[in-house]
Figure (cartoon, rainbow, N blue to C red):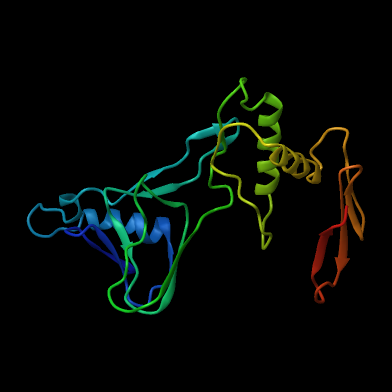
Length: 228
């Protein structure tokens, strides 16, 4: 199968093929770049190897016991991805990141509107917590954040999941502490503080009450509203 992108080594630009609107970061970018690196252009010359690397990857690094980092791809050395010239939406699916200080996308040539996004996995980010004592996070804070992140990351399908920042530093404000405590509680993770669920209500006694309405706002859907 032909690659859906091309590489302009002189200008450090990944060029999107005309009509391409959806790509996989690993299969369509990283693997394609590796193939381009070894294209024979005459004799023993290798096309892509004449230029600084466009992409790099990390994967499999241990995060904590039983968990490892998934595949992440970085566009690097000043390279950019340029969508084709035309009004369209481009979506790159996968954990694609720019190097620090760079951006992923380059502008298109001509008067066109392109909506360009990257759809990353829900559990793509490693949760890194720094600081201890002197206003930093306590051991209890660390456990609460890790358990909450795990609970949020367990949702599948069409659930909308609030992302936890990849790096958290400093001290929780009163409002943040309350929000974190409520997130921890509404997942049923607090020892001695059970989450109670019925057909019409979800509640953590003394903290949160949510009303569950079936077939609302339309048949086959369920609406959950905080009422207390």
